Image (cartoon, rainbow, N blue to C red; front, side, top):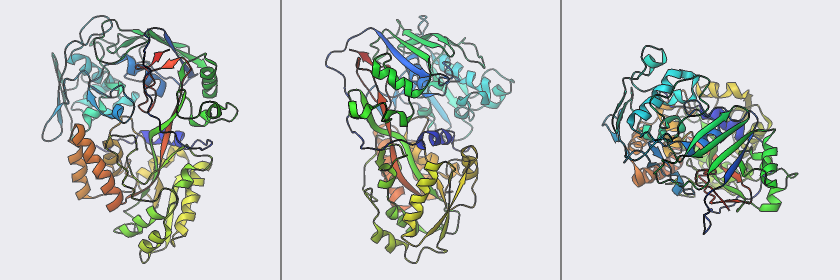
Length: 541
């Protein structure tokens, strides 16, 4: 199966929205010395932004933040700030799954002691049923893309079966079999799509509005377009923090700018907003609070902005010298120090800086181009001297393309820019085409280095997220070997691969690692950013 590329279009909408740029804070927030329990945490959501509270259907930021508090999952992330909070660890699983030699069978052994908010125990059948719920919904659920490679998925989707042959639950043992090797399956289970749900929970294409929770809280009420209420799960005995008594989300706020105004005024405690609104001069949040906390935070995020180099075309095929030359020629500072781009840090590597395993190898210049090095590498390797750059037809993306055009002209490469509508762009670029360079921003549905390395650069991704058609048996083997590792060994291997790929293969020109911005009310304590606010860990002063 082709590697999933769904998040590309979502990232584009975020990464291309203009905002006023300024310096990025690097504070790692901590918890106050004394943590008070109790109270109601107030969440503000723009009207229409929250899609579902049913974990089989939800795919929006605010809903996922709330569902994280209501769901126990096989694997999860610690309630700690990044990078520690981005390490995958077992939650209901007693340990990482046993993986078969062909990376097609995953066997999870579950812990005992987890209970739903109605008192019933969480067993393997709770996870099997949630997988089958998604399969019954088929492509109507965004979760389908993460379960469609399970043996028997099509039969359930088509109504020929109610349970996939590839999912077996016996007591505290869950076995999942895939149709093709995919060693990142355990990482997938960190998403709310894989939430433990009661084995008799109905399947409704419109989504359920309340259900027994398996995590520290449960969804007590959801009135679409009005409010969501989460209450404590009194049977919860897991290790996750759960300080507040309840969460109440107001879904009627007219805009994300209004969300920030409510948080500033103390009417709400947190809400998700689009990047430009945090830096709106009319709100003046930066002037009042800075970006290092304790209320406004700009932390290294999970979105990478870069460009794929099409190695299937004559310009870059077997032309490592020119690919490296472009990485020295690009002025990365122009992508983070100008208006109309999300703030962040300049980067010439492929992993987000907050991800475990990342190490800054200082491969390429970040404060400006090194034209002497770039010209030396490009000399005799520019071939036709012409390149076609594809991007999205919004001013910010075209403007970024103009920066590259000027940068690359300095080493003798004449770039022609062609822009396409956003909805069509990703399909066209993924399918390949008459481009040499393609805008390729990226973030991931679940936080794992596999998503930034294998999904973008493995040969299996050609036709999907691998816009540059990078196809290397050597690196395929290294990527697949890293994917089978767990724990520290996994992060070390991917950290090494990140450096090796960027330095020795250079299939991309990465320019920036965008920031994740969070704003909370003055009564919020226990601020844990992963890199977005961990609602479950939050407390009230």
